[in-house]
Picture 1: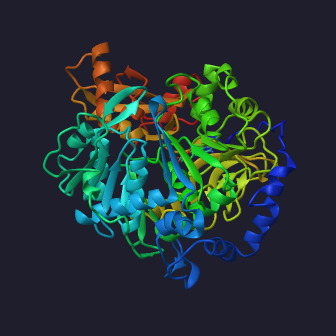
Picture 2: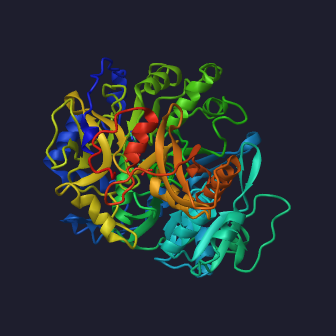
Picture 3: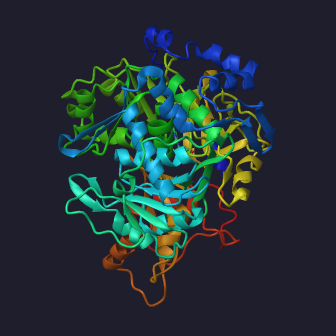
Length: 630
Ligand code: PRX
């Protein structure tokens, strides 16, 4: 890894300073002051945030740190849905709009806070009726429709642990997640709609629940007429709610009770089930939605992620609803019905806060600025980015073409594991293209060498977090060893797994992953997952995959494959392999290139040296190859 540290920092020449009104009107106010308040009294800082929310019983202690395990808001009781729904309903905001959904062909659905609460309560009663209890795991595999969010909130209402799986995963990936979590119920839909076409979801669930004995019921949202037939174990989403009360008491949860599991790629073939807990996650996502996004009552907030990712969990569902925001969601893709679809929605809905990913921004750049220029984007006041580094070119374009050289850009660095924003440039602070920014108040992040020493400005190193924060993961489901590794790799700190550079004044530039994870169009893909999918094909003996830089997707996947004796390389076989990966892991993990090879570079101990493959592919120096076998 060390050779990656030889980063020469191109000192940023440009700094953009937003209108002082931004800072003046922001919930956060002055960053320096907020950060030093936090430093003076970290627990007091978080306690103050927690007190803005409703608790059934208050905590005995803010934090108990027993390295590497933490408990936040010790012995406090709460239910997050009481904060996301009831708090607003009881506070004369019941008729405020919680959710606006936009489908294709102008279809729109609007939920006030009252209506959302009623639906959540009814569905929660439905789940209870089929036997779901506090602590049971429910897998949600749905398209981006309001019912996906209703299902999540209904689980939270009754204390069931949800595991949301993004609708783009294939049957084997879904099966692995259902099995690992021991899901009792799977909630799905017949179809998802992509670019005017219906894509089967339920068929994938049918395949995924074979060999998943824990599954007792499958609840199906039937979107299409004529409705698909339901078989044994299967129930209709709305029929399950029929005749049930629209009131459901919120289950009393301990602050440290498990809240949800969300799988993320790791450096082995098996995804990690990241476990978040109730109290800390609520406080972290509430705090950042309010103070980082600066959400106000008259905002219409749009995050283009899917609730199936952590971005959607934290910044479509729980954080924004906890602050009482009006959340816009859409099933439309950025290029359908045409390349203006997102901009037309911003104009139509008068979106004020827009949060998207660098891969989308680079795709917009490629499609040309004539598309956004056709629409009135004046309503925007804050634009955000997440998922991978926002390179300076993309920053400049986003700032000029979408933000009209006026709106601040929030480039937010965080992870599934962190639960909430960790590093960004706060509203009103000077922005430096290429730099995400500084740790937010509440977070102690730094760039260090492999021994944990803070690096000098202008130097690269490993990104770490030096002390616990409320919304951090508590464990990796059924694999606590993998959790401990995050905290034991670098001397008592949380090792993020990203390489970064420290600039002047503490601004941090994120370079990308240091481990075997490739970020493709914003999705984390483990090299090992794709390799084992390839090796599970009968013709493949061995495989190695690398990420190749791509101007739009950030990276694409290239696979090197050694065939088993008796198989000949051919285009047909390449297609078969691609199809196989797609069916196993889903379209998001498909290699864009496959090369058949006779040998793979390996260390003497037999580890594939992907770094050597990558250097060769890109025509650069492979660095230290002393461990390469002859
Ligand atoms: O490498 C970093 C990158 O995404 C990783 C986390 O991925 P995931 O758990 O899927 O969560 C994505 C959404 C929060 C990080 O380790 N990453 C995320 N945000 C940024 C980023 N890299 C650079 N800049 C960012 N703003």
